[in-house]
Length: 119
Image (cartoon, rainbow, N blue to C red; front, side):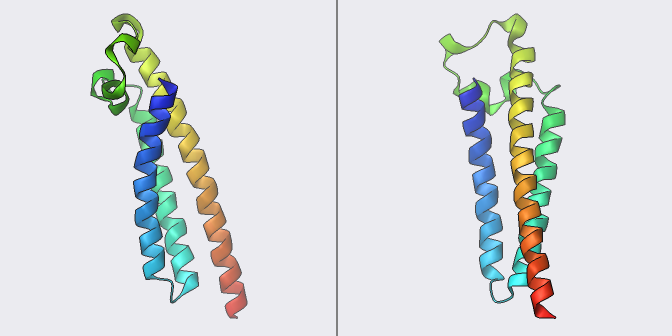
């Protein structure tokens, strides 16, 4: 279940990262603005992941993408499925939120270096 949760969240974050990368490439004529935009959009992704983290506790386990990818024989018993699914999804969302926040800080640091070198 953890592997499938990791893969589903990774895929969603990869699409978001691709969109952020395309924005940054479009702004590559001005590296300062490109990295500021990348940092802000990555921070937005972190916020969305945190919202998903809080939502995971109450979201119906049968409506999660992870549940759909689980083979029927690998699904936990119905009595524990909600709690187990919520716990795994919360851990996964939090891990990705921490990683994206670190990437956002890194992009803001690069933007700061560009802003200091311009003056």
